[in-house]
Image (tube, rainbow, N blue to C red):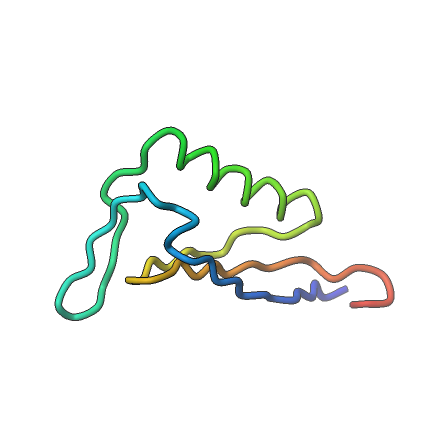
Amino acid sequence: MVERFEYEITVHPAETFRKVVYFCSETGECSADQVPGDELQVLGDLLNDRGRVGWELVQMAFGKDSIMVFWKRRLIGNDA
């Protein structure tokens, strides 16, 4: 049996993570430099909430005004 997945992309405004420190280069590449403890809790809550309903984090992309999160979930039963 072949495994099948569905994917979802969510966008979260930068204000959601007010203290996340990330740097964007002139070419538009961004990376997180430091994430304070309370922001780790916000991020952990997001990951755990989605994980409870079967979504797995694929990747996070930090942008100037938002964070884009890519998720996947295995299709089971009639959905597959």
